[in-house]
Image 1: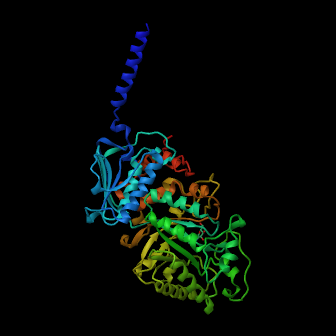
Image 2 (image 1 turned 30 degrees about the vertical axis):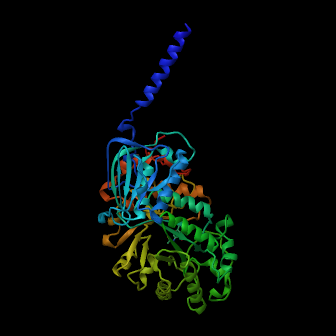
Image 3 (image 1 turned 45 degrees about the horizontal axis):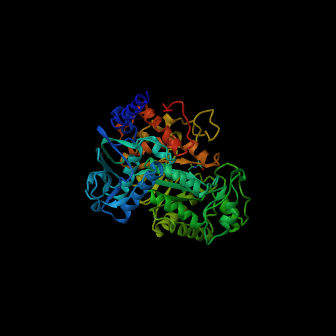
Length: 521
Ligand code: TNX
């Protein structure tokens, strides 16, 4: 009897061992090749899969500093979620069978700066690109090819497999941006970093920070300290004021830079300046500092354009802020200057353009700046449609941020509590379903540098609020900017986006569960 029992146990043990080693994963089970966002130029799944295991290294070829940093970024992600030991090694030093290889050795001109080629077999994931930046974009695809639990960072168990196949990819537009208004409400360095991380996952490459407005001045200017002492002390309803020291701001710049995201600082002028005017009486034509402003009206404030001190102020601010960003651009706002004499406005913007250039940057402004004589290096950001053509006629590039489509501070529908609605309700399909090259009648598509989704902060106070309005609409904007026109289709996208539910949850992102999207539970 006892013998029988032992025999039974033995058979049970053996069969479970055999079952485990014969575990087959069918191609149908691994759908991640079909759910990459932004949709790649080409993604072909073949048979088989690559299984990532403990001690599988990330190889780098050549192992220079920049490539190594990108590899470490991937290694950190994989270590956190798998709990494996993941080493970054020079490809030349490794003779083992299995690896993830990141290489910038094989140049392929067609892939340009940000493109990449990913080939996955049972024994190797090979990611090639012309630059470390291309590798970084490709790594986001690798992350999305793993099961969603890769984003959990809680050691949750999974088969760390990615489907075999080939992905060949590059962006449609060089500008795929997100703007965050930190002036109406202030957001901490940590909150901003969390947003930047999520943007990087969807291959966004520009982060525009709207740093000053009527309600608050958020960046320390050492030569004008009262801007933050006084102007940084207010916000909408005085709910969460604050400002970044230059060191804190530099930390954000670096964080973005490490993710191949260029930070564009915006100092809004000559309107949207109440916080500055309240800080220094001398910037007002009547030498009287107005009170701080905590409402949400626009268009009532203006720097005094007749005073020399105003140009000293503008020069100092542009000089100090320019020195903090490695990027090429400086955004001067220029919108809704309803309290500024229009002929003076035109001259002011031209002077500001010279100052921006003097400090080595190219000027960007909201579309209103097109009334001035612009240099071809300057760019206008379309938000209402009217003036963009005028900037393009002057040879300037245009950033598309049409308010009825991608103002992600608009409510989704009448039941959304956060958000404004002056540009209409914007459901997830509306933000996705439009074609940048056809949006402005008469605008030469070659003048379009890309798309950017502004997130104004009149109604949002926490990082959860940022996420609720941004996600999932910003994901659609990322795809508008990256993916080829023929690769975009709402009916297919709403399923692909739905498959990202677990990823967004893994990243702890408070996204809006739009009823229009086929969310995977
Ligand atoms: C318009 S768009 C503004 C902002 C507001 C936003 C609210 C633009 C250039 N100016 O000052 O915050 O609407 O949606």
